[in-house]
Image (cartoon, rainbow, N blue to C red):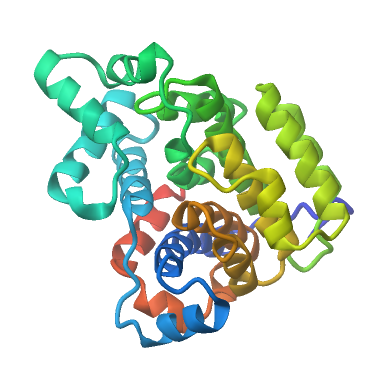
Amino acid sequence: MAGKTGVIVITKAKLWGKYLGCMLGSALGDAIGELAFRFPEEGRLRAAIAAAPVLRYTDDTAMAIGLAESLAERGGLDPQHLGRTFHRHFNREPWRGYASGPPTIFQLVEKSGLTYEEAARSLYGGQGSLGNGAAMRVAPLGLFFHKAPDLYDQAVAAAALTHAHPLAQDGAAVQAAAVAMAVHLDPRKPFPLDNFLRRLLKLAKTPEIKEKLSLVRMLSKGKVPGPEAARLLGKSVRIDESLPFGIFAFLAQPHSFENCIMAAVLSGGDRDTLGAMAGALSGAYLGVTAITALWREKLENQGLIERLALALLV
């Protein structure tokens, strides 16, 4: 049953469908976003998806898989275990498209004995990264802690392994909270856009993220086209220039997973990460049945991702 806010009393089966939708949705957004770098028009992109034997994901999903594995194995967040899991995944598949930050951190840990957090704090003149790498992978944490009052702090601690800048940590925590909120909403009801954004605005701590979320609220109400919204909100690797547009893409197409992904990846910029963030929200809201079976079946390591989604369901 659902109340006026659209919040639903979730059965285990319904929660399972939303966990699957979130994990698969994020990975598909990543993989389709990566394809969109080569096929940047919708018709060509859809044709490329149909022709591809496998939809291959990037470091966004590789790190989300590592986070899910660590959460499931440890029964919660163990930062050093998580750091070692990320490190192991990178050593096994360094070709996934990692930015320079994580490999540098892993090298520092190996050579100097620093903790992952200490190594992350040493980057960029001691300020740490303000990129979107912590937000792109945070969906499993949003699922695992979807009812936890300390979700924000857990997301910050997970982000700190690679992203020491407060802005990057705030963005990751906002994305985790958005995933958790989407899990609790009933897609059969009108989407509570204003309440959703008000809650995120209340949660966010940095002025940059707050300002952009306020802009998302204004643009969403005004039905601004995606490319114009991307220009105003940003679509780069900076967290405050990507997370807001990822949220906007979801809010612009809340009842269609495919349309949400297309909105996220076809306006340029950091297409794979925009797709991963928007796809996580759409999948968490709509559930796995809203994702076309053809896309799901083509996703690389679909079975592993599904098993990890189940392992997060505690």
